[in-house]
Image 1 (cartoon, rainbow, N blue to C red):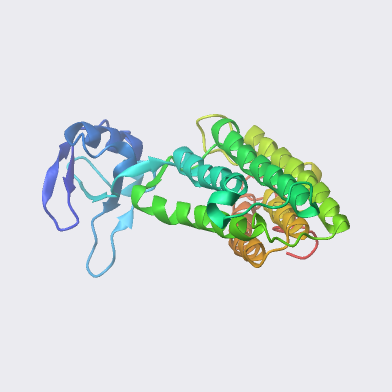
Image 2: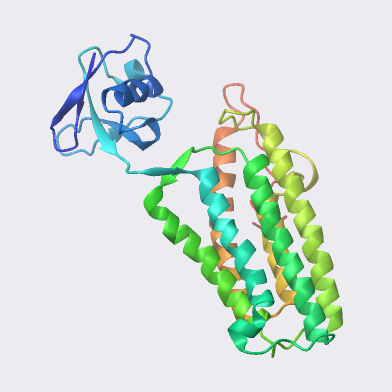
Length: 304
């Protein structure tokens, strides 16, 4: 039996568990006691000792190993309403997928005029819409059928922030790129940019399928990726994503487009560094574990 307290010390109930119970067992048992607190909404801590802060129990921790004995106490935190990460990504990408072509198709309603039919600007805009839609349709496909998520859910309260980034930038880029007075790039820059864009998109999808193959369904197993660009960097999916947007902005130069690429690159720089450090920490060659390739960089071959 384990006693559950609120963070203020209020008793919330007790749960009966087997001797070898772990945190998932605790969560499942508490969800039966308090049905509104479904598993993904729960987090448990060890009670604070003295001035120290409560220690969070890992999602796969054994209660006995954490020091929670029969008759012991844990502290419950409500994480609030949750939304699955898969649905988060579907909604994030749905906005850009619809917004960008809406500016193209709705030129007369939005701007009061349309790009002259048959003009170089009109031809470029059609190709740019296709490239944009291909990118976000690919993202939706990967979300539904390729990606395997380490974490099941995210607080619902964060959804507006996540969507506003993608939806806002999509509207800002589309407003200028689809404007009837849009000044297109040179034909050489346009063609080169789009060819490079599609090449990077194909490389990005290859990386995502390679990562999927490393993680069995329903698990959080981590393995060392090998092959192709993984021989040089830990996160070639980020490398190809950044290069894809550099290519798109070469074909479609707008200030908002470059700002979107820069913000995305900055965030992926941070993510790549964190994932690279985690790989090195987990695969350190000790205790029979494999050694992570020491020459491999985080995101930029030979540099970072």
